[in-house]
Every structure is written in structure tokens, then in C-alpha cells.
Length: 89
Image (cartoon, rainbow, N blue to C red):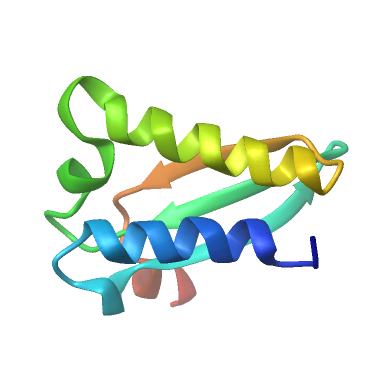
């Protein structure tokens, strides 16, 4: 798997789940030997990404981990409801 493929997997799935895909942003950073993938969604979209009883979020984390395992990396997915634009200011 090429660099950024884990990020791409999460981004494609999250955009498919939300009503406003243009507000989905994904970052990927290395921390302590593991890859941290942060998914930012627009206001009011967090429920769609988390799903009932967290099942959708668990599935996203499983797919991200599987993509990371294929690339030989440990992956942690964190879902944030803070709009990505407000973090850049």
C-alpha cells in the first residue's frame, strides 16, 4: 500500500456516510511508532459517522486497522466533531 492509502480509505468511507462530504477532512500523522488517523466531520454529522451504538465507528476503525496492517503499520482512528477549518486558525 502506498503512503496515504489508509487516509484515503477513511476519507472515501466517511464522505459516503455524510450528507456534506465537502466538510470531511482526514489527517494522518506518525506518533510513537503508530499511525494516528484523525477524521474531522462537519457540525451535526458526527452521529452519521458513529452510528447506532458506535457500530459504524467500530467498522471504520476495523477497516483502517486492516489497511494499516496490510501496510505493516499500527493504526488508531479518532473521530472528531470539531470543524477542521477552525483548527487552522
